[in-house]
Image (tube, rainbow, N blue to C red; front, side):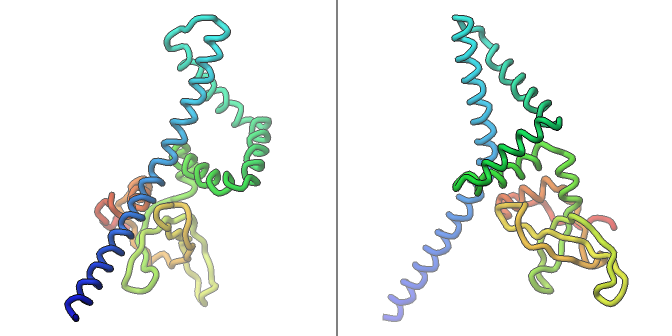
Length: 214
């Protein structure tokens, strides 16, 4: 009887671990593929629309013309979006998206990830560098992004506090914000891109945690 109970316990533990691993890898894969799939889908939609429109107008198909029009459309949208009128239009569209029941949960995350991947200025302004901090308790360490720093006397003496974002896998953009004294953080020889890969993959794709020279 004890052997049967032990086997059942081992079986339940194994099933639970398999289920947890499946959920972790599935969510990581989904988070990795989602922005890529959205980008490819958008380009494909523009390409198919331009190709059908040109075929209907011209009456025949010119190989490669649909791709050229697709590139031009994306460039025109980029030019418009950086000017005042375009910013107003796209802000209105974003406001409309933020009110839709399902889209409002997906669009902000996709926008943040797209800005991070394609906008170097946004990436540098959001995450300055990667550090290691003792969190959630002394003796355990977490990857953190330094997003800001400030001078304060709130703890009773003047010091520099670093604003650190602790990412919650698989999203590198959400998580608790903690304020850590500058001497207590460990700078890492890791780029922001490498840290994002580590977080999105749930630690599967991990670079060596080497301390940087202060």
